[in-house]
Length: 449
Image 1 (cartoon, rainbow, N blue to C red):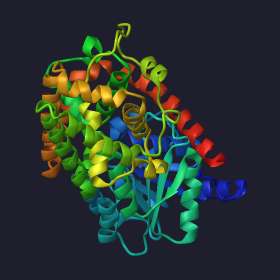
Image 2: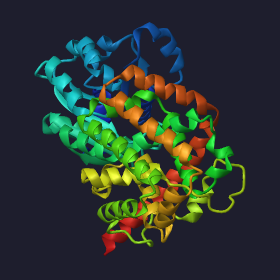
Image 3: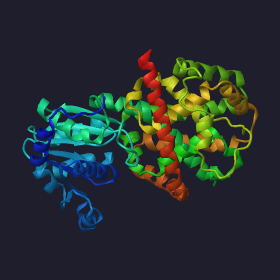
């Protein structure tokens, strides 16, 4: 449901005058919260790294919130403190600033994996401190309106939770109430496999020194979506994805399965075992998309052709195994995940992921063409080999929990594609807007039945 304050306007105004909101960590999401809360009338203070204090003051000089030197100053005066820091560092940062928490205050975090975050709060903070965490399921470049916002009331009384609901109501997001465990399972189900797919795609393109939007073999509707998704991921900060993948145990299992599915399917392709590949894909299709018909698809040819980075007019259909998308659905099937079960907690990127795979598997005749190309056309063999290697490499990095290696691989690929990020984000935003409209239309149609 959409967040609606349960306070009257007068009560909200009184709260805004008496309460202070603290943000520890002013990266992209921390800044988004600080800006939106302060513009809505709340008294907001924030901090970033102490060694960058003067620079941070200058950076946010035109904003309505106040910059303090460090988290001690934020914690001792704030009634609700949000730790907006990398998942890798959350325990360390809480251990530094947690002891300065104001008596009776509320704390929460914005990390993508909640069980480690809340465990750190429980281990370090005084028992009088209430724990109510948040997680906006979208990136900082996406409007908060209508997007899912998870609230986790782990250790808070009714009045404290009501206050947090009042605060976040200014974001106009759809509130989803979960426990930490539920949150982590759902975010892994909806993000781990799909992130692995498009991270691997970017690395594969880099390793063969190929910008797909200038290559005729990558012209076409599904290719447009793949490019936009992959570039959108690499235009963000590495820790956004590393935190989910490395700190969430459910994500480990899923990324390993994605690597396994990719390898198995590629093996069937090069062994030309068409019947076995087809049988496997049809079973996965029935499990994941059995309730979908071609009239219910989120995407269509017009949308897929419209959002293109290429300046070349689309030619005829290019053969492609679409190994990356086949492996996503194979992974869901193997793990017993039905992605539609979690649509209420889906990120904008996940809706595109889902729309693209749905289109490939459910548009009439497309899956059969894809299987035929996978077995008999070898023009994508090098691409598929590089993709398989990249998927296995990401699985190894994540299974070993190596943040530094994750960062190095991510930023190397990020640098390769950096010249196209600005344009890709504009096109991606339009694609997200269009798909969200389709999602809302579908939801409204289902409710009317």
